[in-house]
Image (cartoon, rainbow, N blue to C red; front, top):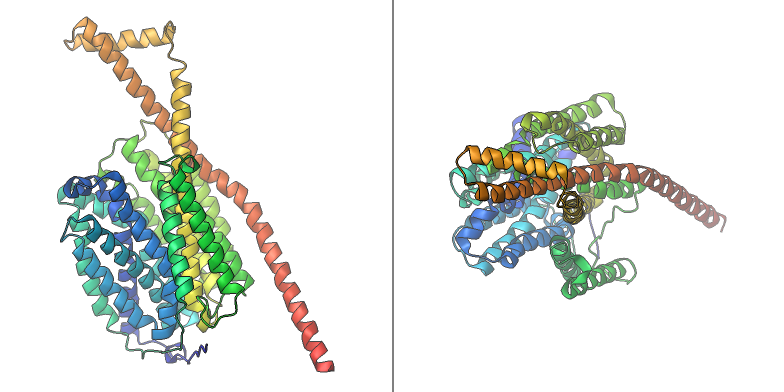
Amino acid sequence: MTFHVEPLPVLTKRPEVLGAILVLTGVLLTAVMDSIASTALSIGRLDMLGDIHATTDEFATFDIAFVAAKVTSFLVAPLFVAARGPTPCLRAGAVALLLASAAMTSSVDIAWIDACRIVQGFAGGTVLVAGQTLLFFRFPSRQQPIVQALLALGSVMAPTTVTPALQGWLVDHLSWDWIFLSNVPVGIVALVMLAADRGRTFRHEIRTPYIQIALAGIAAASLTYVSQQGSRFNWFDDGHIILLTVTGLLAVILLLLWEFQFASDRLILPASPLGNPDYCFALVVSLVAGFALSGSAFLIPAFALNVLNFTATDAGALLLPSGAMLGCALLVAGIGVKKSGINPLALAPAGVVFFASAMWLMSGSTSDSGAVDLEFPLLLRGFGLGFLFVGLTLFALTLLPAKALPFGIGLFDLGKQVGGLAGTALLQTYLDQQLAYNRTILASHLGVGEVVLEERLKAVAGQLEARGLDGVVSGKVALSVLRQAVDRQAVTISFNEAFLAIVLLFLIAAPCLILCKRLLSLLSAAQVNISSQAAIAGKRR
């Protein structure tokens, strides 16, 4: 296999200002399209279930199909980007995402919706990889801190803040169809903007690794199902979860063996970024960052809906202040790196501290908390995420060679996605277990004969009688009200413990990541030393 990297003329001269702005805007809008498709079902779930008459299992396949296709595309899309160039792949992905989103509303057939979600997932992964690659090729290195910060507005901020808020409004005032239809005008504008990029198509000879792609698809489908449905079936107490886990892990092992051990001219990573120790470290950190981002994005709206009784619109709007701060932090971090020239990784510890502090403050919430009480923690969360993701992205990708860049971006996005899947799955499981435990503990204090319990029941019954209820009925209703209060308190405590679990994750992960960075540095130094000795020995011969 040959892999030729031709010089890109856009790297050697300053991009024309208007064209550069249009291209950047187009890439940003394609990232927003992916965020709309990614978060659509979490907001429109109940309305969509009622319209299409799907069972819980059938509805679950919509998300599984999307995520599995997206995970697979992070490995496959770089091959197309390397073979055809980022711009054609970006345009093709935007068109596919636009058409699949519109097609979602044309039928309520389960198989049709599954097919549309697969196309959306694969197209979403493609636009993220191709778009970021295009920006690295289109803009000089000195502008990358700001460019990557702007891109993160669409790829990080939009799916966790802006799109849930807009989708909540659409669900409350229109219908779930409009969530997907909103991708149509966004896609059209994105394609118009991308027409400003007139870069020629680069064709590199790539031999498609069909076996690795098939293994990646099997692993993605199996493990995505396990991560999203494992908690529901109590994980490994269920036979089909065990079977799918074994299938997925076996596919991963075979993929790694085929890629790195078997001699082949068909590789899924024909230009691997894994030889760079800094990139390898950033890839490991991306798993933790994805866990924190997706885990907190899952917990906060769920807390607002289940504990604070917010509407879909209010729950979506809850993250808007955090999103605004995230956007500001992204820009501050990008400008700061450009102006100061500091190592981008230096921003990550500050981001972790801000984010962990936000989760610690969230762990002190009560069932009487309101949007005002959550405002400051959410602002801290946004500021922390902005610093973390800009620093990590620049550190991971800036120094990669052009031929390895698409593959580095794909793996980096895969790390964030896998971390996010693990975060959501583990926090959901932890939440369910703690909820059952806290209900048991609280109920144990409600035994017959408890003085405080009897006084509370009498007080509630008295209030109900004052409103005209019969004495016998008021006693039964008072008991029901008290049970609801206990359940709500158990749910509140469980969410607080889940927020605290994210803080503990960082406390445990921090020393492990420091050790990992040290080990990678030592390994890199040892490899350089071996190479130097081999070169000296060769010269002596």
